[in-house]
Length: 198
Length: 271
Image 1: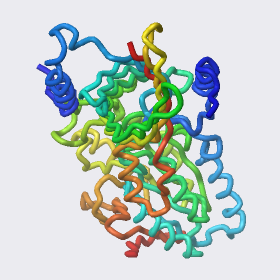
Image 2: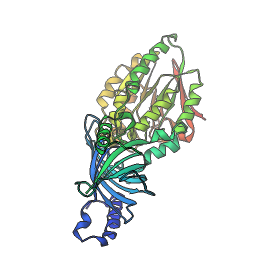
Image 3: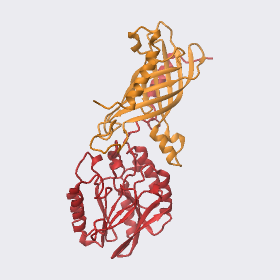
Image 4: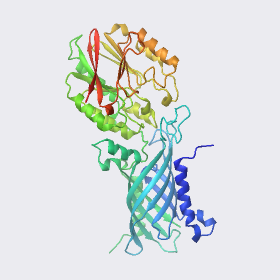
């Protein structure tokens, strides 16, 4: 039996959070996403696609689950990146006709599968116990903004979001603390994407 | 307030999505794309070393410095490099491996940046941590072959990849090592630099014996290693072979080796 890792536990946590909100929905609609996600970069793979869920009535908390890939032309081995993210919108500013802007803060958990054998979630058996921690799991922090537009009920997608965020991860944050000549911009990267709401 | 049409915004975003300036966007921390300026570092430094060698008279004594196992203790490595850069007698620097902790490109880039500040040619041997994730690919792009040699002032330096667990449990190429040491008698001194000491955790008793036999038969003056973070210098096996474990900058020391035609003197330098 595979070891249950922190990644699995946090994914279960997010799903339980969603299920706790499911009282307003019928049982099967719980699993129907609220929006589709298309993402570029931001440590989620070159291209990532996935689905998202609202987690509360105020729509200030979202869960996103993405599959990303980085082709061989950009990496020596094709890499797949699975990301689970919790996104918080502290405030919404309405403007124009149907537009809204929200700052956003996101915490992501990512799991990368690469073709080399040295990117692992659990330590291979030939290593002594605790010789390395997981090399495939990363925690990310993203800060950005989201502009949404309500298209109206007559369109297939009732709302479109465009977002941009600057993201770092646990390793880069450690390097910032370990090297005095590293600046904050050095450890952050950009990611952009869109959400299409059903 | 006027806005562009929704269509125009969507088109603009799509254009931005696929035409964005790629260096601003990182796809994964496990990238292995070494920039051109950091590629082939060994070749560039070996070329610089030739110029330095040409300024020496044959048989002239010289000094080189050693650091190892810097991992992600970048400030400590930076401090060591700062001290070494001020030592005009030290002609080049060797890094004994574990230039990184996770084999991540950003770690390689930071270490490369720091080592380049030493103001002298610097060369490395790959360590076990340097293999993790895409580290092997990055190392080969950034530095070159993992097994290589060079000569300097009638001394031979042999860099040998003897990492096993992270190198997919592949046996070190002892045949290559034997061949590289086959003409050791033609030199005043031969130095072997290999990250794992023969008594290290990754070596079986057989590998330990094989390595000992090879370096002893060749009359290697000093077998230089990292991996163990505590400095050691001595005759580990109570024979005529000297072994050195360099230590690590985060324990605030590096080493120097002063080479004379008939002897070498090793010093541990605290900083």
